[in-house]
Image 1 (cartoon, one colour):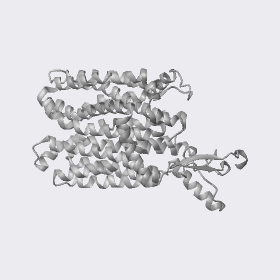
Image 2: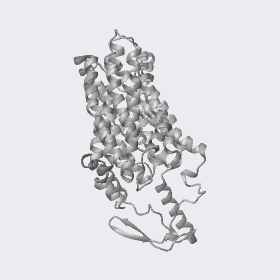
Image 3: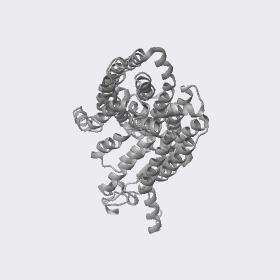
Length: 491
């Protein structure tokens, strides 16, 4: 191994100090190194992807399944206001927003596996007080902290999928992972409707707790996948075995735990207000996600209150959105080919990040079209299949937007991608937590026709954002200080 390395010293910048290391003593992955996650067997890596998908889906299902039992909680706790009970959705989403930032930072310090195990365990334990609650305050507080610990799957699971996947199969693996997670918001009300109708609202929580137990068992079977953590451990082992302290790896000289946590918490907030890409994409994706969650208020009004459907069958009304989202995932091979047809970036030799934005442009048109379709077929005088079919373009548009907006932000910021996406999560879940609180009042005041029309007009007004970045995003990236510094190697 030493003979294959050049004798020139390799320099690193560590907290303002320049460190030189002999490349002959660098610890890296060998071709058949079984400690390298990408060298593990195909079946085990597929198991990890499936485990991450299942565990993330449970967290998302828990968020939206709650809305199915709102009426039951109103009766149990003698709460007259539906908005008060819906605060449980808001507190959970706020917890997800904060937890996804904090816990993803901790996973970079201590590795993914210990953070997964502790967080999933606490997520499950915090479901118990909700299921046994005697008052609404217990529900609201427990769901906030449950969302906080569930946020680890939202933030870190895609990283684990990437850890074990070769570059050429990364898009396929992420699509398989997202098949469940993208449909999680829709599966929640479908399952929750039948559970509430036949077993009561408390069993909504017990069912999620059972699934969380399965998730925890799967996490115990998943080994550490985070390469920096594994390489640091390998370096310590090599030093111990050889007695030579000159052995090193590229992840030795990182910030201390507290400094890394501080920078990882501050950077997303700074990017939210200072980076043009983050400012506009957080606004756009945040509004789209908030309108999606508003559906979990609007659909019960349209199908239960106006059409008189039972909760279980009313939950099936989300199948249109779910089918549309699934189509977005299945279109990945075709979209990948279209992206490959775009001109290559002269610096990387690959299509620019803006190539992925064309899919968001398509989605940006489909979303308000589906919203308008639903709004003007919501009345009971129109056949029930019409508003359900409106979910197809709406779900397809949402799927394309979330998948490829994420790809664009990650492709633009690369080493700062985690911070950019963390900031996006803060805005996305923040808006999604607030808007549904006004949903009941808005639909009762304006009616489903004009309430949906107003939302569609807002979404139409935001369509220029993805089209503008599709055409001018490259120039905007060249003016971003963080991206320019990254390209110059300054971190």
